[in-house]
Image (tube, rainbow, N blue to C red; front, side, top):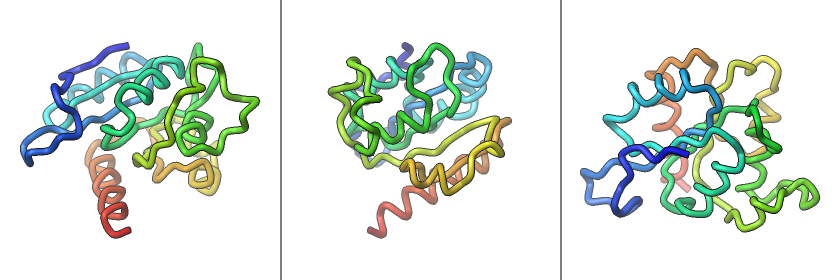
Length: 157
């Protein structure tokens, strides 16, 4: 579990503070690439497993501006789709591990970032509570556009 550029007061915006972004990703190379491309604009948190993601949801949930979610997670009971259902409050209770029982419901935008996008229908992603899907290797311009689109939609509600 790595907190990168850990903000003193996440979510408290003065207009110049970076927003808090959680990337749930099990691959070190993908985390490094994301760090290089996103650290100028965001405070970054990285979770390698579902258990670490749940710890961050509990600790920083309401302060997260966006969650980037890999679907296939090594060494995890829950995959990215299940984690998204968990924070949306729609995961079957019998599938919730003990370490995930105190995870709050979150409205934070979730963008799936996956190499397996063609294995999942967009409908399945949206029904799980995801807001968008980006294919790996990540085009960070497209990712920034997806993040902006999610925030604009949430502002118009």
